[in-house]
Image (tube, rainbow, N blue to C red; front, top):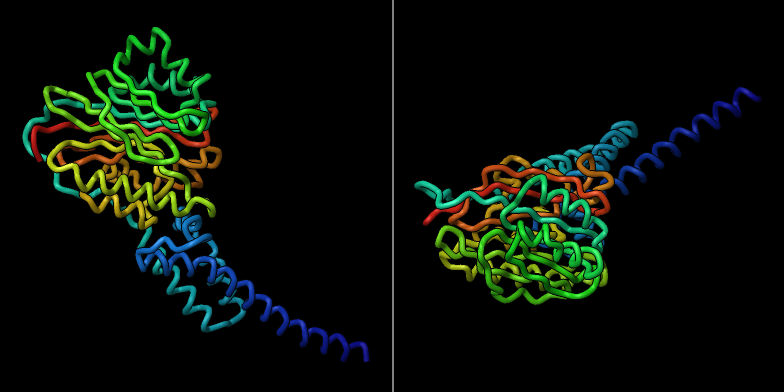
Length: 332
């Protein structure tokens, strides 16, 4: 009698385990499938799709677990489902935004550009160290608070190294700054809840437009602002004509967001992607470069060629900095 009961229990346990495996596999595959469908459709959708799209390469993990569980449960539909999702994700993991027509002839000048989000000014000391170490020519600063960041940038040492500057916005998150070794003048701004100033910089006799990018993040309550502000950056890029343009900053979006790809579709090149680092995470700094998303970018127009791109740790910030070496040409 005991042996019979044990056999019956074992017989009942196997189907329950299989059902549990199928249920978990379905949930994992659904998590990966929904953002993949929107990515394939060229849409960012609604929450939680934009947030998941930022980490699209990491969706290979739940998809892979879904494949393993489907195999263990001998669930044939799940095997086909998982295989399709894995193939789709793999196709979209490839680099995006590094292609574009390369300029020809000798360069007019070589530029080093740095972008840094200071997280409410907490990484001001890290920025100052990066300025001394990297000696960039143009700097885009986001989340430059008035007490720490703005005050530090007004110091005699920084003013001597960067005599030309723009400070914009108020508050810890809204403030932005442009620093330059070259003469500049204010050239307007892209409207947004966070300051996005623009400078007209004269380099080797040629005018270059330098735009700070800092659209709202794609949080559930700010998706409309995020899309709208990225659209304004796209419109600026589309209207640039033959004038060189550098757009640098915290875009709060990755290559897997349709709103960001629309900026690239105007012909701008992503410096990191163009120099072999299309997926190196910049946020969150606590887990980068192992885990995260590349949401900080330096985009350049036709008359500029990226040569190198490197990522910097900024103690105190939840972002990593990005520095790119560029060549400026007389024409495309």
